[in-house]
Image (cartoon, rainbow, N blue to C red; front, side, top):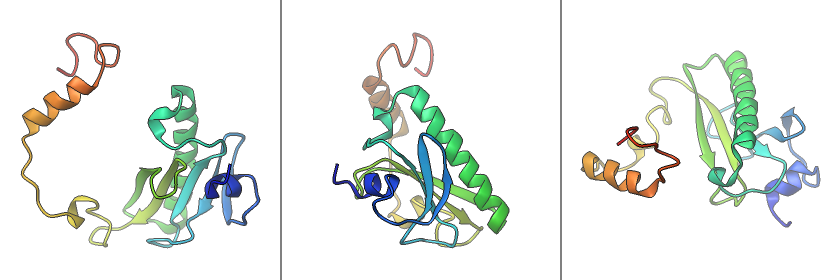
Length: 142
């Protein structure tokens, strides 16, 4: 696989690794939005989080929590922000970074987009149509 994050996970591209277990690695982001900005990356190639089996999602989030606590303890932010990505870099990764009230990311993403008028009822109906009965047993979330 020619994926940059696969190469990082295999050690073929240098990184500043701050966490590792048998399933994933935690590295410093090369283009950080704040000091302590980290990526938690599965070692195996996967592009979207919804393509992971539930057990692997659990492992990824357990690692993300550990890295988030490292950020919290090292930088004492008001919050540790988390975004799940897999677009520009076609490899799933969880971005974690410290944030304080009033910084440029504390309201992200809503603060960076023009105000939208959204029909919440229609959005809920549309999203429910996108799920299966297995996902939403009768009488729940509808």
